[in-house]
Image (tube, rainbow, N blue to C red; front, top):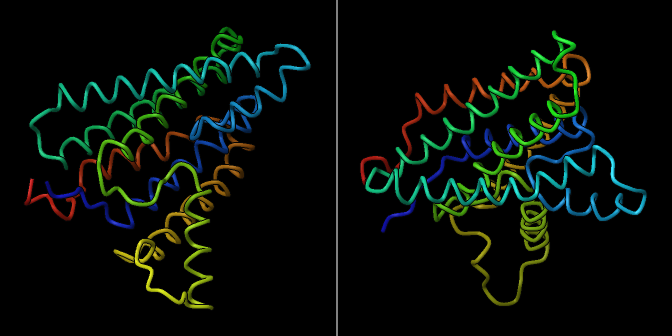
Length: 236
């Protein structure tokens, strides 16, 4: 079965959105990391020794929500979207992610405008919406073989880039191909750059305008989902 080919620009864009979302929730939602669950596990373990606060409740709730969302996305992909072209399935998931981010930004704006919505329960809902959106993006990495470099966690991408850089300076004795096929080094650099750019822009905008600015990446996702023509669409 042909693999789904993800253009490098789209992978960089998804990384940009993940970086934006992760920094936005970290700044505005008590250090919640929406894009990757590992950071929340570490922070919960480190903070629980000081007692349970809203931050710990939010991160604890994020962990099962992340798992449940991945499972739901898998069921939707395998059952409701079964038989549809891979490109169509991928775009549908992008739309779901965009709608979750748009709903989050709308609720965040409503919270800013209405004191009635300023309670802890709304904060938890905002965090869970962000986690659900990023869980959808994480799920795409697993549901579409050949996705390439991850767009939500940069540790592996940076390690791969450093391996390639090291081998460019000192070539290995025996031929090595597992890291260079499909120009993955260039793809990885674009993905890392997109993530870092998303982090920087989000840090600047979130500190000034709050979580409502997540509407911007949501609109970008909707635009991409409506216009994109994946490279191998004709083979679906």
